[in-house]
Length: 282
View (cartoon, rainbow, N blue to C red):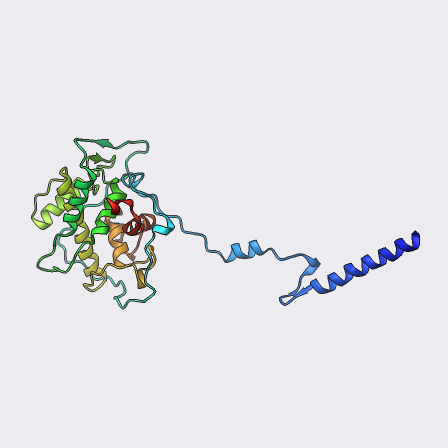
């Protein structure tokens, strides 16, 4: 019994030594102490942590549908030849007002009057997108209808009679001062409280932002696209600048440091909604 036990022990020791001899080295060199490398730690070191986005103002929280990966637009793999953003001074004599400070936390929006139906909201937003807002200097500028619908969904969830705590009004959450600026700049008399005029005010302001950033940073190129240099929602490209400025104000995007996207989460949401919003089926 003892002899058989010794033989068994010898066989076991030999097997252990054989295994150690095969696994003690790898193509990457000797693993000191026979310990396996911490693959998770190495991957974590190579992974870039996502950048935290600034919290959007209260009037854009909780109204629109959050985007999902499947709803995100699929950018083209083809690089575009559009100009790089290089700033030149604007020619506008008077620029839009700054976005007001965020409303106090805990504030709830209020509702005034009768809410337009989804069919009425859809018709108003579609008509607003179909207008030509720069008939003389830039008649080619069009605000895509899905972009107008997506902004309205993100801003208000297509609630035409909502007034947010920061003062944003209606479908497009137009600020009273912004409405006054658009009416002055385009010699109009849109009523911000009327859902049809509200849609037009929002689309008109988007058209102004397209023209402004197209002139100041993109040599008069007003192309809105998600491909090439604009494949990422954080890229300093025209459509991202327009969406960021609609939410945060043009002065937070056109800065002393050039064109920046201070609210990439908002931009990402709206970009996703332009193809994945349930509102597109209304």
